[in-house]
Image (cartoon, rainbow, N blue to C red; front, top):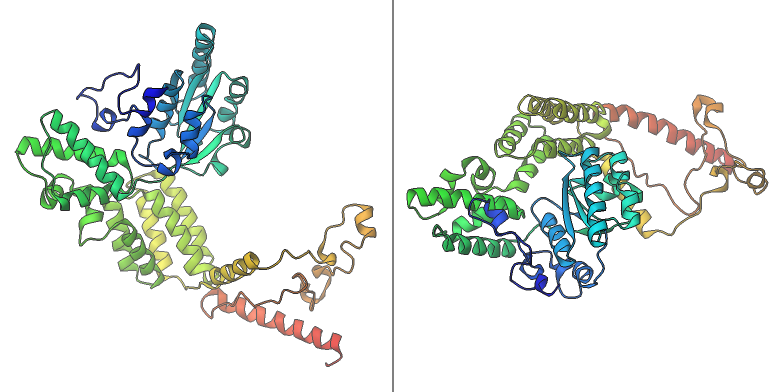
Length: 451
């Protein structure tokens, strides 16, 4: 396993030719050649320890695109001299899993070794497909490595998750992307076609990459090919011509991706539908994933419209679903309708503010017991202990409201945290709450004998 940590290619690695994409030609053959992920690969860090342990184990690699998930899986197979089978959950299915099982059995019969089975985008496999790996992981036939961009807590079945270590990979930082550009230009120079790239162009390429090594290398390769054909150096102006669509969101006026989503959100909050539409179109035109925008629109509906107009959340969810059904460009109109509706809707962040206030309280307060009258009493013993005793069933009370009943733990005083605005539906909600609170106060005065 020694050569895995050196800068030389590992045994059995096929040489990369200039016909392969630059990202593939630069794929590291040694752990020490991997750029980034030092929180996992540095001396004494968890993933390096896993490589050095002498015993391969199943794992889930969770992180955004282009951060080295496939590379690390291949290096794991090289480290222990194991066969490597790759399955794409986007394109594959049960047939591919069966073929992997047959191939792994043949390998085990021949060499007595396990097989590394790498499943890219594992979250796209359904529960039954994920469960199909379990017996083979249990038996040691497979060393399972799943790669996912989604939270495995929600997207990977619990049984598989419990049998695999989860490693969280991070986007590459600016310095790491600079190293990657240097490495790419060195390889291109060895091939006789490395362009001169000035500092401004490097900065733009790094912004474009947004932490994604593959995206960076693809852009460098496009630029290098174009520069070679024109015999030109690469500066900011050259990049604008070479990569106009992908650079728009990063280079028009210097705005970056997160600035634009912030501008969209603030335009909606500020009830300016024209500005909201402008930023929506800017982001779509710049190549932003419409699904990401759909998620942010749903967030806006909850955070800034809230109960002033509950229809906003439903309309935002419908827009996201419509986009999933229609795709681009037709589905983008549904996102535009949602953005305009949110912009003109009545605004309230009352629920958002109340939630944050209660969360802050719970995080700092003691863990208080549930009051006895609110506890469930499904057994005779619990009833004898007083669980549920004295609870007033609201539906049996006047107006369906048990005036004066207390639902918070002892020692917790109500804010009131939720304070409705006087806008939209919340104006009526506020009136209703004022009436209920007045009845509570009247009941409290009656119980105190002050009424």
